[in-house]
Length: 344
Image 1 (cartoon, one colour):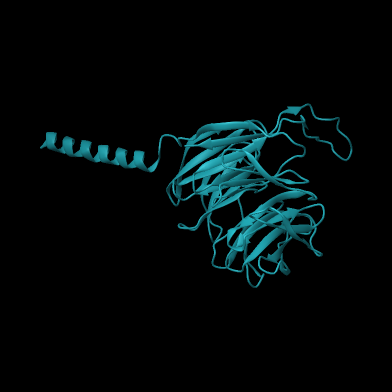
Image 2 (cartoon, helix red, strand yellow; image 1 turned 180 degrees about the vertical axis):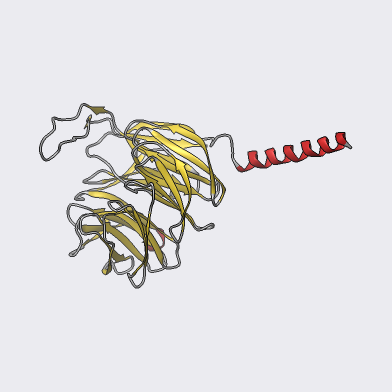
């Protein structure tokens, strides 16, 4: 009987270990596929991957570079004033650039990349982040200085409303059913609003989260992934309840989630991308920390081929501190702007 009990116990333990191994992979499988020096002038901010065409839109301040899945430059959208990045709306055949210095949105054709129109945002100050909401057919632009969001209709190209947010908004996500969630960086809060009525529905604190930035969503399990400068990525439900906390690197700026693999990603300026596996909606295991390159803080994921993209540059010493800029950033070395592509 004792031998039989030990045998049964062994089989149970083996089955449990096999289940755990299946739920939490030992590694992500991601590796560097290509490293390309793209050069050109300007800094950078958001990256947008178009999973339908496998093109990547890279904001460069005064223009947007467009590259294919292999990193070849296939186009450019010029004459932009302080672009932070662009939203791709495949069903409308249009892209929408968020122009921070001109308080405007440049609408362009996704096939030709030719500008269609520039929409002024008269009540907005400092449009930065952006998000397409399929329920309302609006692209929302999140205004860093006026602390609100401006909705631009993808069909008419007209401003359709404004949402007051009570603080500096960052990244956002939409569930496709009329609800949008956005990080509020300076108050460390999560705000939910109705994308059709432009009414704020709830405001939730984000404990242990300093300066929430990037956000991703697992729509199937109703989970949000929020990158924090306190070196964690919080996982919340749609009500704002924190269900998990994932350790990440320093200087996070972007978050992504791949529903096909169950991997959540956080890219950080210290030169790392943390990869965590969703073992269950409330349990996550860090399976890998990808070494990228210093300054590679932004990221995009092409969910159709599972490739990750990040960009950075080589840097020199920072300029001398001034009263207006007491903590200057290191100087970007001209011509060294680099694209890093990771695949499985």
